[in-house]
Length: 409
Figure 1 (cartoon, rainbow, N blue to C red):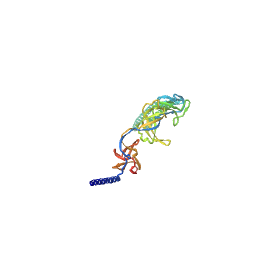
Figure 2: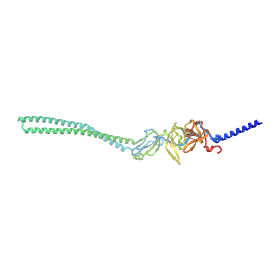
Figure 3: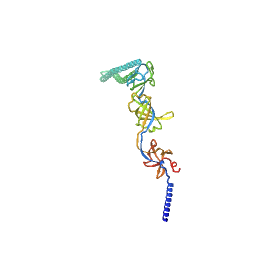
Figure 4: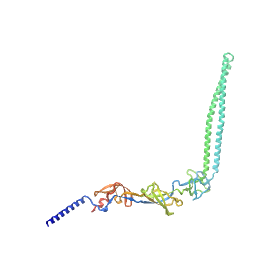
């Protein structure tokens, strides 16, 4: 009986000591319920989609407003709204009588300029030849006069000739030398004039040729042709009307290439961060609601579009499957843009991320003690959010702040 009492006393003392130690441990480390603790895990992000409303539009260069480059009355219109045109097909014809007369005048001016050039090229060589002959003539006269002067001087020394004859010989030599100088200068002048006149004549030919080419081009502009292949969308000018070409060419008609269309989807600013070029997309139009047409994100315009105080961004969807006969510009499109699937992503519950001091933080449990840790987040998938940096797989953290989940609070 005494041993039993001693055993009972020892058990009681041991229980009391364990209780004290347990209370001490609980007083040193806070305890949290399992429902308030989450683990950093890896999982796959399923593809998500962004919905947007868009408009079917022509690509850049697929819609052309055709104008007239010359003024005049419209004599004929060869096409109508909805007609299909190939590049180079005639659209309309303007009156051209005055331009034909101008072209004939320019052709005549060009012919006259060519005639003057041809005349100069044939005349001036003869003038040069004549000037050279004069130089040769007076050179020979100077040589003869020098010999006569020399003979007369010898005769005067022998008293066979008079001083008067010697003076005459000197005068003849001086006259011949003066004429030679004049002939040389005339030859130089003829050569210079020939070169300059030929240059001026050539420039005149080129100028009249350019004027003729301009007149020919203006005459060609009286026939308006299609600059692209497409469909006539509208006609602003009819037969009998007069078009006046000024700084801006008046619009005659509009052509749209229906094989070069795109969709401009207006994505809310909340979702624009999820959109990247290359993502797949589908869309439907009200005319064919049961038919989905495939496409992909081609570009994102940087400038925002504000509609009813809501900020949107224009996302260009390239159409990647045949759509001929289905789409028209300005059709309303319901667009779905798919995000890429993310596999084996490090994630935590979204509610575990807190925003404090402009940073994303979590409360990491380090040996049962919460420790604030800054993290960098990525994509969000429902109640999960991707962790880019700051945590490792398997770590435990609180889903709320320590003050909110501590036992007994």
